[in-house]
Length: 359
Image (cartoon, rainbow, N blue to C red; front, side, top):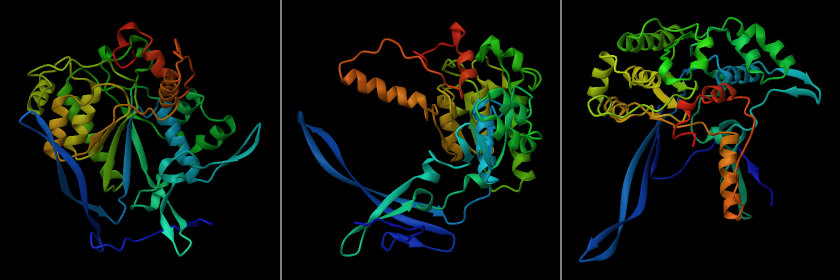
């Protein structure tokens, strides 16, 4: 049976409505509510109705990375630019062309259903399921405690083939991160030699206002409809969740005003993003989203999410360990090389940084 591949589709259903600006849909979710009655569990079918609305026009999107000059940030930028400019380069295995292989949104397809009498499978690109911004159209920017331009940062990361780096350098040499927040207590002392591009002082309210201004300026300068802030910097130590400090949105703002020591840089970036209406994604296993941040996001109706990227070997190791243990094999140690996170490894080599997220 031959599969059919299409690039676009519509849904013909009374639960889906198309307008010039939006796709609106009604979804009925069926579940079971278990109630205890006279010591007996009673299962009660329950139906919930959800209303979804999606903009048909993709926005002009900006992505601001915290840690833009790090291994992750520079490699992400390199990959997008290489694809955008359709680059080719020579390696010892031969000529390579930039592609988005491995990307969930750009390389994956989904089965839409069967078509015709023979029920041939119809597949559609994942990126066509809903209106999505293409990575090549994203405007990139961000912050870093190191002041290297992105071309030098790419070289320091040692991830890409040298010949590709040479092609990318002219496009990246003028890209430089904005000064970032540096509180030495939250990352290892061995990171101090990189911290040459930091906001002065320790006034957390001034830092919050400065980051908010950076987001506004970036959005205005590039004529953006939306901005997403993505934490891709070093993993911080865990913040202590304290009553009266970071347990509510109001207490958190007061704590920032008072320069409370348990307010981390990532929490300040998250607060700045929320207050500017920019979605915030956390890519490290730290407790950025203290209760006060969550309440603030709900109050301002801003999306926040993420507790670690775990997109590469970390996820693979988690899967393999589960498989091995299920097979009766108990691993005693796993050692690997992660060239996108080596500086994070250096950061966590200090005893105090090996917190609950590393154990």
